[in-house]
Image (cartoon, rainbow, N blue to C red):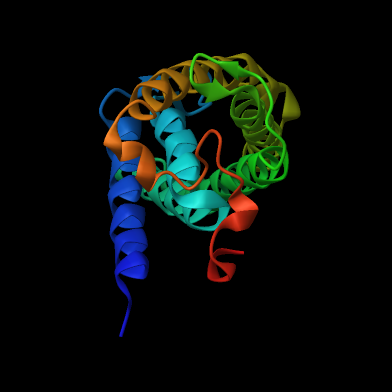
Length: 193
């Protein structure tokens, strides 16, 4: 039988998976030359990792994004997206986990380490889609055309996620965040590590 913390984590993972799907498919902006589309799902991916930690955040990121690809008509990208967006969550989360052991500067209420983690996750996404696009299209020149759009997408995601996190850190919802400012995550339960 699952304890209350485990049940909450499963529910929040499902919720964030759905939020990634919705934020991705509500306003898909097609990018020319068959390079897919840009969206606001990355903001929900970043929030998923802050809320759930790197493991469950990566699950919400990968599965939610892959499902969105299928629903929007880019099913050929779904397996790539599962791995790329999941890796994006893992890299961000592990960086934040290591960085939060020491208290650093904050931008608003959001630690700079969290923002840097989001940027590193975004870089993983850009590189991942560049290589996946090169393989799918048989041309890295076509894949290169998507790079600026992917950078724009994750940059907007970083800004939006940081604003939402900063607002939520000032509310009682703060207690649900795995990576909270001012909390040493190494003090969390051993089951989480």
